[in-house]
Length: 217
Ligand code: NAI
Image (cartoon, rainbow, N blue to C red; front, side, top):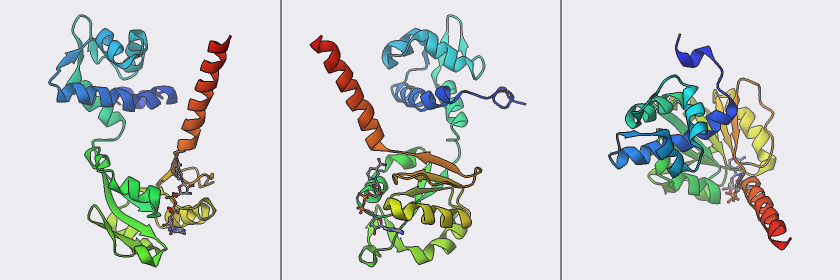
């Protein structure tokens, strides 16, 4: 049994992993082979002890006086995040947001392969985004079965999201990247990641208010 399987890693650590992954990826691109937790701490603006604590969760990647092997750590974190495998993804809703996501080529670099884009608006039928044609929803069921779709991104109006999500699940989709502002209430074994830019903006607004309060005192 691997170190990973023996223990649950806290959600807080998992939330920080993509950021470690991004920094380590940049170091690799710049030809950096090893890095100390102090160096990484300066770059990432996270305390060195937090970094050591986080990375200790996965066993001894670091060595005293040597630092972390960047390539190894990058690969290990990639494995933990499930990035060593490709994931086929479809987008439901080819409006502003759906098209913006489809146009973002960097997901592919991380192994998220855009397989299909679906909508109900016949005017969108046949237009292609980065070579992927928009299909109509009546093709969805067969498409999902034939294309080993792992993830569906939902970028449709919220009043449609619950029904469409259930339909996706009935057709075998196991993970939903939900942008519609509604809770989907799906069975527990379905993985849902909600992304709400407005919540992030509200956090920013909170920080602005705090800053203003402190500086008016
Ligand atoms: P939009 O109106 O440009 O696009 C929505 C698309 O969904 C349209 O092309 C429409 O034909 C299609 N659609 C409607 N019902 C459908 C169905 N049953 N099946 C398949 N396609 C269907 O809207 P936009 O700006 O792209 O926003 C899409 C959704 O994402 C909205 O619910 C919006 O509130 C949400 N949103 C969420 C954000 C977030 O951070 N979570 C940020 C921006 C938008």
